[in-house]
Image (tube, rainbow, N blue to C red; front, side):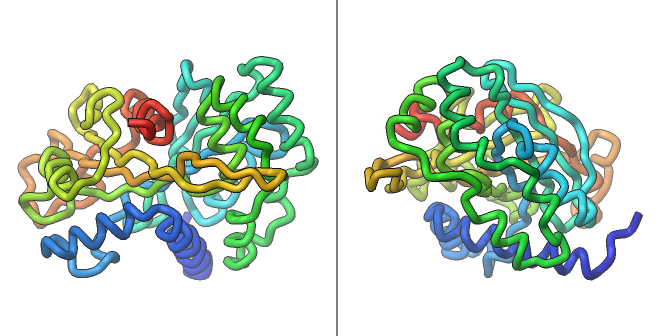
Amino acid sequence: MTTSSSKLKTLDAVLDGLMSRYRERVPDVSGIVNALIDETVIQKPDDIENDHIAFRTMGVPSLGIQSFEKIFLHYGYEKREAYDFKEKKLNAYWYSPPKPHYPRIFVSELRVRDLSDQAQHIIYQYTDTVVFDPVDSLDLDDAQAVDRFLHQPLWDIPTLDDYRTLLSESEYAAWVIYNRYYLNHFTISVHNLKPGYNTIQEFVAFLERRGFKLNTAGGTIKTSPDGGLLQASTVAQMINAEFANGQSHRIAGSYVEFAERRVLPEFQHLPADQIGREHRRDGFEAGNADKIFESTFTAQTGK
């Protein structure tokens, strides 16, 4: 199935909207891009390949993965493997893009029914205001409408008390109840940068040299068992958040991720200039992702 050029144009606009707001909210994005330009690794932000973007959702009726994925399936993304994060009580899937230059998409959802009665009650009092799947009434060919939807709150701003109660049980739940459908992070493909920066070890050394704070859960570099996917991330910066009743509190924002996808064994004979995305390790790794999630958790942000 080929995806029409008009759908890809809409996808371009939707991704542009997501990334522009993400850059505004996550100062590390501009900081890292500027450092890469400063060290002549890239000339402009568009020189970076975006490995994947990730979203967090609530697994409740009318929302969650089954709702959210309709947007990107419409633009030609294809649903791939499922993941189960038992300890964090999350389901997730990744989606391969309609064309190789688009980012992969990773969507996770909280298994709300696996939480305590108190946490479920707090979540449902907000999400129960969404009585039908909002994506069903969205014109997915209208980029502006989709952009508005992806950045509008789907329920009331929580109270600080509710946020703190959720935080004590599920930091993921607290993040989503405040941020709703907000893009959680994007990922720089380090293997396509110039030598000296194109392995995760070299890239991490560059980030540390430039003063960026990195997630150390499971080690600074998270490596898949097959050695083909290596990942790292910054720690989410704390942002001032406004809660109901005019209360404000500093909470975790978002972060930037970095991935090195190594060439698959059967393609290692190829010259460097002939290696494309299809020759590298694809997909994701639950063990890596499990620790990357913690980039917004207080054990990391409180360091």
